[in-house]
Amino acid sequence: MSVPAPAATAGLVDAFGRVHTDLRVSVTDHCNLRCSYCMPLDARFRPAAELLSFAEIERVVRVAAEAGIRTLRLTGGEPLLRPGLPDLVGRLVGIAGIEEVALSTNGLLLAEQAAALAAAGLARLNVSLDALDPQVFAAVARRPGLERVLEGLAAARRAGFRDIRINAVSIRGLTEGEIVPLARHCRAAGLQLRFIEFMPLDGESAWSGAQVLGGADVRAILAREFGALEPLPAADPGQPAVDYRYPDGGTVGFIDPVSAPFCGRCDRLRLTADGQFRNCLFSTTEWDARAVLRAAHPPADEAALLAALLRDCVAAKRAAHGIGTPSFARPERAMYQIGG
Image (cartoon, rainbow, N blue to C red; front, side, top):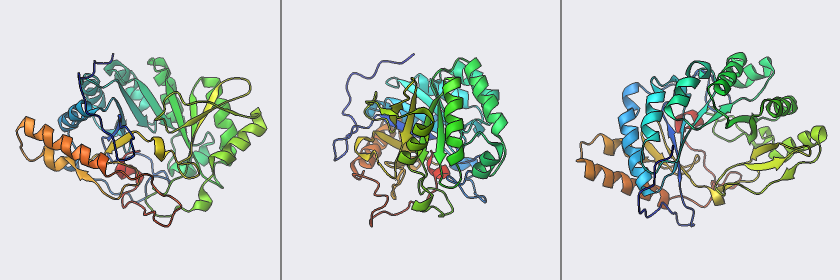
């Protein structure tokens, strides 16, 4: 159940008029897969002492909610590796102004935790599933685990989750053959499928534009199998996905940050697992919330400093990430270090 918002808020509005109401909160950089689009095989993780505690995350979110944040998504790394995650969900659900807490996961540990997450008040799940062929799955994830993901999805349905989105990263030369099987599976299972273009956040700096299997290419593959897709108006103006309807009903979404960036309607901010505010996945600047949290300020002063930091982060947001332009600079952090 959502908690009423505070009576007044100035809102988090950037120089381009974008109102920010969504905060992605990474709870760990650790992961039990090594997906090629997210992290290197030899990934090194931060020690626990460098990660924000649940109490610190709660303090940040309370300030963010007062500033205008309404929805949260817990990310990683793999967030289900963080012990006691349902406890954090329960804390965040109870914060005034927060209307929804969702979770992005690779699903490997979902079977064991789905019931506790649902009981804690988690509203929605995004589950990464790039392939249904075990060999292709392992080629992308660089570890096995397909059956565990499918078991986790089944457990999530049993636990009562009905809004489950499947995120599939499309990589040219690797996942073309998985597009139709994923679509068939998700249509039959009542799962909301979204295809995502491969972005330059892979951790090994191996990304190239030639590897991007664009949303238009994926739609063409689906159209040959199911018929022409019809674009739909956005239910939420800030959503990154553009949804399409199949001729016989049902929908599929596309997140095309490379070929069709959605920067102009972006409403999200990020908090890394080690406590840095970021205003874009591709930001090259961070704002250190952890330093404020650990400086032993009186509570009122801490809240004011965090709020000012958050406003500074929003004010510095660029018009667009600039992928494909001469001014684009890859961030030093990979996806797993930022929060997906």
